[in-house]
Image (cartoon, rainbow, N blue to C red; front, side, top):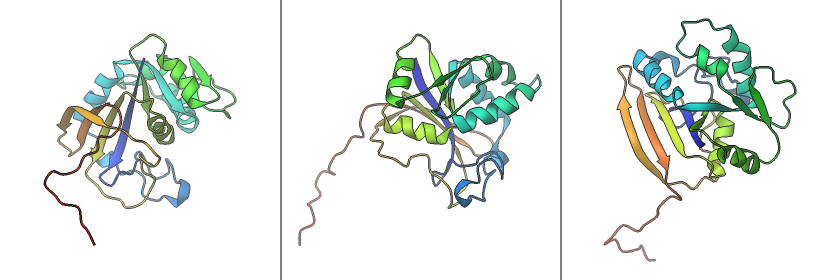
Length: 207
């Protein structure tokens, strides 16, 4: 299976707390809910199309516990409820106890080994939604195949960035669009390490 990450980010790269003021106040973050004003029908359709590609969900513990609490209570005809509840869930955690949102498998141990083994199995995509810390770890470990970003037209100047580690990635743009609310949707394939080059014809500065 391919690992596909979907993340909401601001123009200054913040991924923390897109959905509400109290979603993730860790680190003293007080500007949550920045994505909601731009959530429109065009993005919902795009997100539904992406979810159609999933044969599983890969989640961190915090996101899993929130999803396990909320999704079973969200009634149809929400466009995602049936699929979110039915898809296999894989939780990367060494501390999670009970995992009752079935079907769920807890992946314990080294992330490179456990997620690498998951990738080696059959299927299309296993998708990361939310779980920004997990997403950053997967990017650092070179385990990601597809990165999908919904960029909100807002700068908030505070909060945890999606890319915070030592990731060294070249990305190939395979899809782009905008929505009526101003979201920019970008879809990338990971294409090895970040390419580096010198600008031709420019002499290095000497002292």
